[in-house]
Image (tube, rainbow, N blue to C red):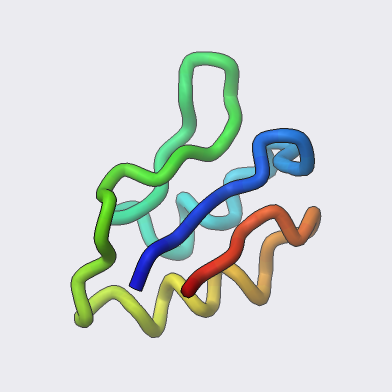
Length: 62
């Protein structure tokens, strides 16, 4: 699984970071970034939860 964040849509709410801190983090400007290039299987369920719960719908998972 690969995850991307649309930098133009992210508003820095941090929901993804609280849902799956192993995968998401906030950069110095307070916007979400993906910490790992390929998501380990054990984190996939929480990544999907982050996608569903992103207020700006800025996260996509493939």
